[in-house]
Length: 330
Image (cartoon, rainbow, N blue to C red):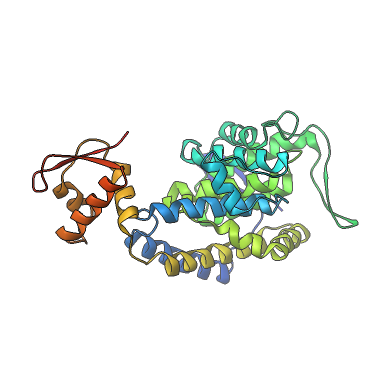
């Protein structure tokens, strides 16, 4: 049953769910791991890890929907190489790359941006992408109807209420992101693309408070636990509450953060250090500037990095070794 909450003197319909002790425990564990990851600058300091995680995210979220392209093929598409595969699958990946590349440009609380993202994701795949459905839909699993979505004439009002909840001060981003994911799946506002939009928008909601979620591929664990994912959605449908889905998704996020902490602690190599530095320094710079950015390396290591960059034609060196000025090669 829907409950009412008051936010900024506005009465808002709150989706039904219960904050259990297990959910509170998971939120606490996740918050601690986010703090640890931020303290170690794991994702921000590793451009290679960021790229790998984005590829994993796209591969997993589309794989859940039946896309057959591999991570290697997605990497090739990023590098503008020719890829052999089903035309529909290639189009899905190209669309997803466009959306995830500019993910920060979308406002998580904007229904207009939500529709814009769907249009980008589904252009060339369905008719009228970026618009809510105008007919009834049901989700079939095997030979059984697993879910009958609300009537199409209710979609606009249900989504309006869901975005109003999203803008409210009720609960943390961790919980609200899970609630939005479930409720959007339940409403099923589009003819197709609902699953990938639910996962995309949960990422965006989390990014608003915790930037590292831009590069945390929790979709990989959803793909590996796909049966449990759909089971959690189904259980919440039967109970008329998103509590079980919230619990499932928080466990997925918690495990994803654990994997990030395990895999992201290795030291960067010269190529990765240079790539990271050049992301933030487009003008000329000195070895002293490089050392200031990478304060954990020695002068000798900095010199080797810069020598490597010159040899790989990533940067230009002007002057002699001691007073040299470097420029990023265009």
